[in-house]
Length: 335
Ligand code: ACO
Image 1 (cartoon, rainbow, N blue to C red):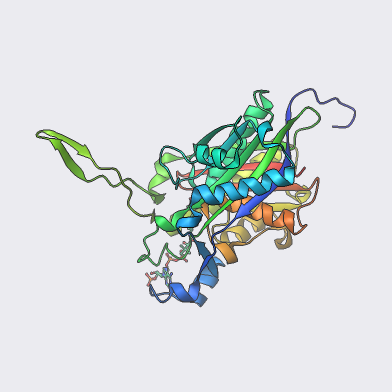
Image 2: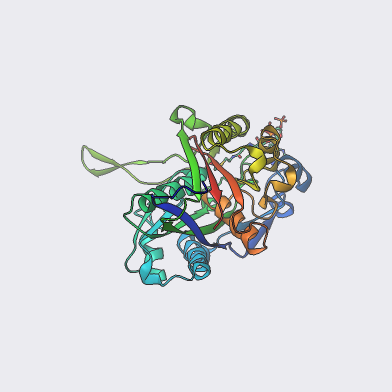
C-alpha cells in the first residue's frame, strides 16, 4: 500500500524460459494408433498436437534449457543462484534430476532438489521456493516444471493418450525488501480421491535368496477416470481462486491474465466463466502442446512474456490441479 513501508522480504519475478521436444505428434497421427479422430480430440479437449521427447530431450535436458533461458533473461551471474527446485513426476533419475541441472548450468553454489506433485507441481515448487526467499535464507531461485509423461502413457488407451505431451518451463525469482509480487497463495490435496488419476508403482515379486522376497521397482502407466478429474477441476479451481481473491482483497476483474494448468480447453473456459473472467484474458497454448503436467504453467507464462502479452506489473491469477488429487492457486504481479 502506498505510504506504508514494506518491511518484510518479498518475491520478485525476473525471468522466464521454456523448452519443448522437436518431435510433433498430431491428432491425425494418433488416430493411426487408436480409434479416435482429430475432430473428436479437438472438440473435447482443444488439443491439436503435442511434443514427444526423444533420448536427447529428457526432463534433465529440457529443464536445463528452460532454466538457462530464464537465467539469461534475469541477467544473473550463475554463482549468485542459491536454490533450484525442479517440479517433476518423471525424473530422468529417480534419486533426483535437479542436481544434474545444477551441474549442467554450472550453478555451483545452489542447492537443487526435486519436488513431486503432478500437474500442481510447478505451483507447489514456486510457493516452496518463495518461502526460502521470504524467510531470508536465500536470495535467488530457479523454479522449473518439467515432465515427460509420454514415457508413462498407455498408447493403446484412447481415453488418456490423446491428452499428454512433454515439455519444460522455468521462472527466475528473487528476494526483495521493497514489495512482494507473490500476492497470495493456497494449496490443497485430497488423497482420498487419488485413484481418479494416478501412476502407480508396479512391483513384480522376486526372490533374493530362499524365503526372502523383494519387489522389483517399476511403474505401470497413467490410470485416469477422465470424467471425475474433469468434475474435480471445474468445481475446485474456481473455489480456490475465489478464496484467494477474498484473502488478498482482490477480485477477478482486477486480473489481467488467468493462467491455468493446461489440461483441457473446456476446463479453462468453464473456470473462466465461473469467475467471470473474459475469454481474451484466459491464456491457452494447449492446442500446440497438450497437457505437459508440471510444465504447463511456466511454458504458458514464458510464451506470453516473450510475445509481450504479459507485461511488467500485470496481475496473473494461476492455478495448478491434477493427480494426488492436488490443487493450488497463486496471485502474482509480474516483475
Ligand atoms: N476418441 C474417440 N472416442 C473416445 C475417445 C477418443 N480419444 N476417448 C473416449 N472416447 C469415447 C468413450 O469411449 C465414450 O464412448 P461410449 O459413450 O461409447 O462409451 C465417449 O467417447 C465419451 O467418453 P467420456 O470419457 O465420457 O468423454 P469425455 O467427454 O469425458 O471426455 C476427456 C474425455 C477428454 C478425457 C475428459 O473427461 C477430460 O478432459 N477429463 C479431464 C482429464 C484431465 O484433464 N486429466 C489430467 C489432469 S492433470 C494431471 O495431474 C496429469
